Image (cartoon, rainbow, N blue to C red; front, side, top):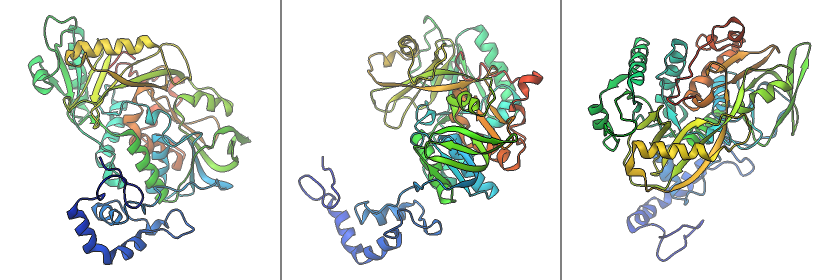
Length: 467
């Protein structure tokens, strides 16, 4: 194997094969002009917004001429300004999407995204990357379907490959109750104009040949629902793409900047206190997932939120063998295969409340038992790593997208295990809510007022597992 250094590479022989070197020689007279056209000014780490080049095959070839040493920074790392029109607290997918759509859809570009750690280091980088919209209740179905439609054009919109793969998603039935519930859900989902279909055992086997459909197994597969438009996306790429696109529209992304409090006068938010000083803001949107209740307490009110650990794991990489997403409530696991070949596994939350990004070993054991029940072919695989995130759950397992008792302060939280799939849709409706100081039509049912009116949206069965 040949590894490349900055200029000539390390190892025996040239870093590129002969045809590439010949192409390089033919293009050499154009190299200086190409590099100068793409390179930023010496004192400016990122080019002016109007001069920022798009990612394309042309830019890939151009930067190959300089051994890929002249790529511009994807986004700036500015110091905080004294004040902004909007401050978004939380630099995960939802926060970045909110900032991006504020700039793109509403023309609000004097925006800062502040993140206490690194970009996408929370739940955005710790989930199992599943994307779907097959939810039971109308309110949820409309919101998640809007998000799925945004997913389908997100890579083109951001000029960044989010690696969105619509490989289909199966939710298995293992008993008579499961069959009745799945049929109910399929019909309800189709009434909302969303794709969903029922599969017989034979169709399940045809769609996923390695699935164990032996009727003598402990939890025999009796059927499944299928959303063909569901699938997966690359979580890191989503965060990076949104950050790059938001930055290109003038949004400041400020990492390692933890919020320690709010400055509130006469019932209205005036700004945030941070570890990097006070930052004034006309409006503040909080998108901090499992820490939502902690941040809300800084503003003097409580949220109906509980935080739990949620664990996931990946196996050693293997050749492509699972080309869909499989979920099961009865045996309690969901699994897909990443582009690197790893099996990505998830299941239920730990029952105890915690802000720790780790959980109980028996949860992992149950996931592996369930995997081997459904796919005996995987029983000899080794687990490569495990991790955990902090999920924020509401009593009805639906999110909160709402104004708060403090004027100018907004919260987007309570997504539980369904946050990643909602990333673009959540940012879209939250940006509209913040910009116009009233709920977006799709977000109206998810306001805080539902916990006093009693109009809850009970989606406890929506995750495909028992939480």
